[in-house]
Length: 394
Image (cartoon, rainbow, N blue to C red):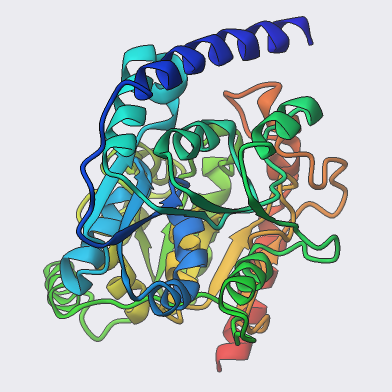
């Protein structure tokens, strides 16, 4: 506790010096009202939020809207914005750098302040102190945020909330993230919104790029399933030998296994095929690092289903109508997934887990190996769940 208090006091002192400096800077008067939408979380969070974006575009149609994106979701945001021209400006916010580097923290705060935003909206229930600092630095006269259940100590949260005029409380009966996004958008618009599962567009260039990749691997008009073994944290990744068992099952079902991920995930592909016979390994397709996010989404549209980690790609797949089987750990059990039609959006989990909704405390104890709730998921349970999905599809 003492360390947390010391860190908080050091950050508070740094922020105080930044806010003092801000008082000496002049802001250019904007020709129009401008709004900052704060969404610096990961890919999955942005996908879950995306269907409600139209509410904000309609409600604040007389504003120029800028976005504070994160390093994790910027690629997806940029692809969407290049096609739809939603945001007049996109700021890339590196949360880790903001926490560790005073000069970066100062630069971001000054940059946001000088834009002269009149309104800031932060529609995320998992509020973070880092984002609160940026919002306070904006100098906006109107700020709308969720009450939040992020990484705050009680007294730290009270101090942060004191800076806001309008705080929308999270009803205690709302647990799933899709419901929270819907609720916040309803409060903003004053209207009921029909939203139970995310959806997202893919564009013509993504479809063309996806078809080219599938053609290059001989997958055009073939049945395939996408395996996504990677995750943001090592403790959320299922053991490789069990992914290999899934590959063997898919091959027996005459489905081509396609392993997807970022360029850095190629190592997972190599480790999986170590557990396969050479002739089996040759039948597995590796597309890691070969697609943009929306091109990957276009590939998901062609796939029979998604199988893998609870990560951004899972939500991207579900958002384009690809059935999904998710390896669900205890960290945020049921909060982010499943949603929509549960015949096609399915989960596999360790029925004996003792860490349900512990914010991954079980995994953070040993970050270099699967958390107990992930290691406890049996391959035979996964295969049974895939069989159920295939029966539902048929």
